[in-house]
Length: 288
Image (cartoon, rainbow, N blue to C red; front, side, top):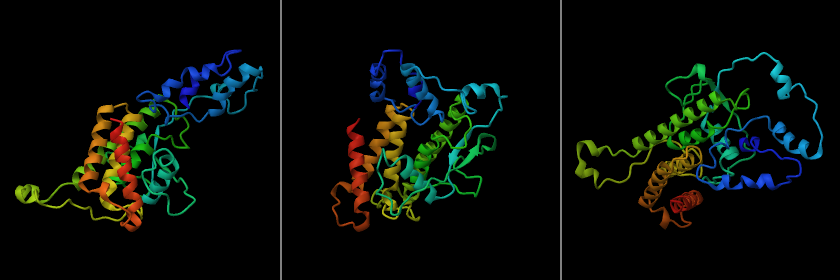
């Protein structure tokens, strides 16, 4: 949406101006601004229509003109967070699944977005915590999803387009991303590596002992899904192609270690999730 703010349609230009910036959407890093949108979308389109039809919109109480007359109130930037795994999963289906459907379809509908928020003034070292109920995403998949969702402005953010607010959201998202990588490293650690490295070479892959984030997604592939989400984050929101390749490559190698490429329809309720994870790995690796 912010890209539209820089577009103006002179008299008689028609739609040609709109297509001049079309290549911007297909270049590396084209998604850098897409999550940092302004809530004043009505006024973005006013400049397009009034210039061509000659209509002038009277300033309303919420217009930029009237707001400029009000005394400025400094509001602390806030970041979107969630209070439970269920809320995070619902938010994934609202904001991420339509563009990156790495998880199976929701098991129930409708899904409702129920965000909480953390002001920067209440910032703490544990970036994943929710001040309202103490919930803290700790698994790789919940941290990876939180990485993307932290970039989406909260509906109660009064000045989401402010550079200070955008910077706070991006810093919070990066903290979630770093915590995701750390969580993956911890879960992939083999206990025998310290005491008996030779025995560790023949040990099977460790499996995290926790509940399922999604009822139809096995716990052992959640780290793969988290890496895939981080690869999208590094490319579209940070413009870091090197890290995008690293995360996508890690996901593909892990998927091959689990032989996801050889699984058929004999995995019952997990078959769909494994197919999606494998083909997402292949598609991401193919973009390198």
